[in-house]
Amino acid sequence: MAPPPAAPASRPSRRSASRPDGTRRRASHSMEAVLTEAVALLDEAGEGALTFRALAARLGGGVASIYWYVASKEELLDRAANHVLADVLADAELQVEREDPIDGMRAIAVTLFDAVADRPWLGAYFMRDTELQPHGLQLYERLGQQTLRLDLTPRQRFHAVSAVIGFVVGTAADMGQEPPREVLEGEITREEYLARWAEEWRSLDADSYPYVHHIVDEFATHDDAEQFRAGLELILAGLRLQAGG
Amino acid sequence: MAPPPAAPASRPSRRSASRPDGTRRRASHSMEAVLTEAVALLDEAGEGALTFRALAARLGGGVASIYWYVASKEELLDRAANHVLADVLADAELQVEREDPIDGMRAIAVTLFDAVADRPWLGAYFMRDTELQPHGLQLYERLGQQTLRLDLTPRQRFHAVSAVIGFVVGTAADMGQEPPREVLEGEITREEYLARWAEEWRSLDADSYPYVHHIVDEFATHDDAEQFRAGLELILAGLRLQAGG
DNA sequence: ACCTGAACACCGTTCAAGT
DNA sequence: ACCTGAACACCGTTCAAGT
Image (spheres, rainbow over the protein chains, first blue to last red):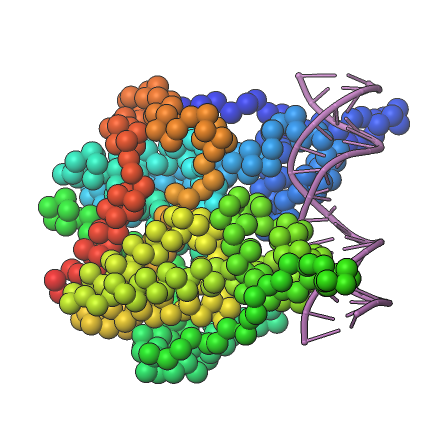
């Protein structure tokens, strides 16, 4: 396997510190430090917390210095996404040696889902720009390679991979939406929140909302990861059928 | 079928106009006018164009007046989503009288996809708050009702509907991402843009990226709607299998 | 009941200047 | 080559006051 496009060389970040002689050194960053701190901000406090001012403060420098590394906030997020995808890719590579290609696809899909579920902001930026996200492209390639072992046309393979990616990212982003304030602040648990929502659904007219009533208990006790897996199995079953069983 | 929760009464909006006697009447809005203009802004210039200031200007009033109708921008977008879902729901209801429940699911899914493809912002707000989005809930119910006619457990039905919604919204939101500036400004066409991207993919090492090379022509000429349909068919095929064929 | 004006506390981005 | 300070042109939201 070829190496991914090389990342710019990086040196460890130095927080602005005073020298022995008491003079003050200018803050000095590096692409690596910028992305690491950006991801830390994202992980600690969500997408809203990543501002150039907050990031500059963490790096111990001025706001404008970040623009030496990225041209815009969009690029910052694209690169941050690529940064965390390195680990996702490494995980996926480990799990991909399956005899059955469909098992391989499942393994990669689940790995990616877990990553996006952990980092909801990742969903919105995944594969948006393959030039800035070589690791995203490699993950796509790995998933696609599995389909080469199935009896399908190129078009079917393209559609299958697109479907899996679309499902994983879409579902994960949806599930990863910022929980309501009450849950975030620990006033109520996720279970209580779901129960409250379910209560509302139960109060709907049963004749008009037979389906909602039918599944309300499932909804109230559902597990996101299990729900994702069940949907993924439908796609994979359809694919296996298409490939001739 | 029961009516959806009633919308607040609305009167036509009046742009601030001068009276015969020359005095100035205060601007007067209505929830209906606020949502209509918000959607117009969204449709004309994308999510970035919807600001309280721009909306107030269109309504002919001050910024703060909008806060009498909605408590936050989040609520404004949730309600705007519900507003356009009224039409989507009406479309879906017309198409749902199928003998085969899977055909019914397909019809609703395609209708929703078309709506989100037209209005990318809709993807991010669909079904986020069923209290503010009764039409979203009704669409969910309609889709779910189809599964009641399939031989499945409640849990399987819940998972199936979640999978379809997740796939539709995820795929449509992804496809509906703001096209790059060059395309938006008409410098190049979508085809040229895809071709340029494909060119880049072709320049990758063939041994490391066999899949990308395998599908690059499909990618260069693909149609989003067709790609969506193909993925949807995989889910529906898996579901039909699960329901016993 | 509904709207206004002005302020508050933020944003991303730019740029001339520094080292 | 890389960083700083200060400014610019915005944001969403609040609030006392008006009608």
